[in-house]
Length: 269
Picture 1 (cartoon, rainbow, N blue to C red):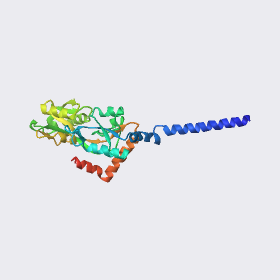
Picture 2: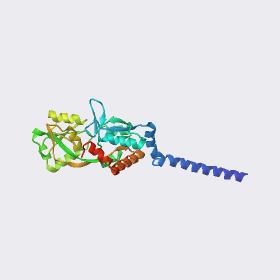
Picture 3: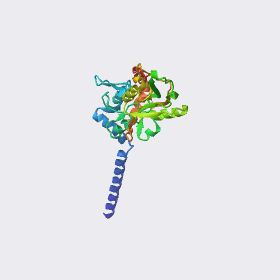
Picture 4: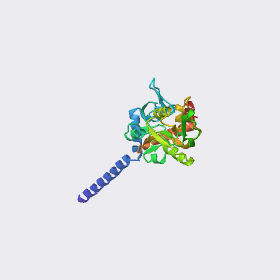
């Protein structure tokens, strides 16, 4: 009886160890169930929360009369929602270059689709998808300023967005051509355009496609284009299920030609 008790106890311990190992594997970060949990949370909620720009015509722009937000990246967000929850239901949060990271960190949004340039430094903080659009940094100036190239901005002030990659890109290019430039940083693109119109800055610099939304009869975009900018969908580190679905959606849109149709729809080519 004593031997039988010892054997039974040993068997129970083995079963407990196996069961315990199984539970740990199924809930460990990186396992299938853990990865799927972030996507399931969106499905259970029934709406995809997305950080978007609202001051970039053709990408993400809020109509001041209707309050409606439309653009290429809004259409892309709806495609993501359809993939995840089966409908195009999205809830948008207005972000800037400075705030789009914090809203991901806080969990207020599931992803950012906000002209977010992919670079190695940002990859340390966020998951980035494969690029869905490529652009280059360009320069918007007043027509009557007599500025034809970046070199003509020697001694001038350039307006850029806070936390954007434009400042670093322009500085690197200015160094190459021997132009000494200074910068003023602003929270939003309309603020930079206002500063250009009032003479506080001599140039408005950001990606070309964004600048085209602010082009008017008094301004011109210089032919200079540098530092290719690849836009990616950003999600929170650890939300690998979301990152996987995002990449699958972008791949499907590219393969089907739908991504090109979206780009053409908004006049971005």
